[in-house]
Image (cartoon, rainbow, N blue to C red):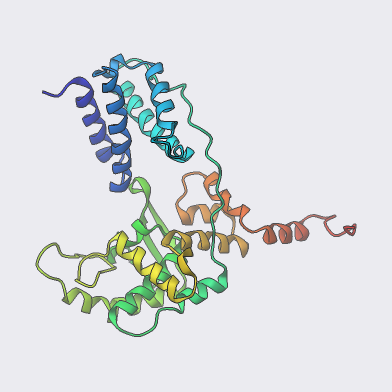
Length: 315
């Protein structure tokens, strides 16, 4: 029979999936982190959430931050993610009245350095988009994928999850479901609309006709060579292959096109709140990292906007 800790962890996992609607990849990350936390607690003889106090959480985070087998210590982001999972569990316990206090409330994660996304130049993006040639179904699909990733700045999971009902090509809009199943509408430009329309007319039907027995693609926009819904791994491989053909090496993956979309929008004067909406960021602080990418743009905007930027020559 399951003990109290196992039972509450199971209820929390159900809550994450049903109430919060987390994506499968996010759920898997939570489960991995909480399995590690559970193992730590059991090694200390704890089998009931009510027995966990702040010292256990601090000791776990200290152990989580330490190097293993003489290797390097885990990255701060990895440790911070582990604490997010632990806090989610304890907050759930309080909200459901399993316990009266949250032992993780005053435990802080290590500071995570703010990285600057590495965007492609506009010339590199043009080379990437030109790297797909031919009119066979897979080439039409690959062209549509590259155009859509760059035009809409969508995540790879959002792209492969698209259904035909999510497309409004005449209006230049795509409906995507982001983190936490949050819905948003993303605009796409004419080249992307044209590429997707051509693929839907001349590429997708032939790929769908190849479907074998088993799960069908249904309404999926992007199909694999066997007629099923394209996976994240399959999409990743398509983008990397295009990067290799364009001479960009291993610099290219789907998220780089998302970074490039955001950076180029800001470079051409887009308001940061608009970029936030396009990318689906819950907080504008997440979007602000892209404003640090282009020092050239920063200088140009400053010189154009500040009344004394050019008054006194710089020695």
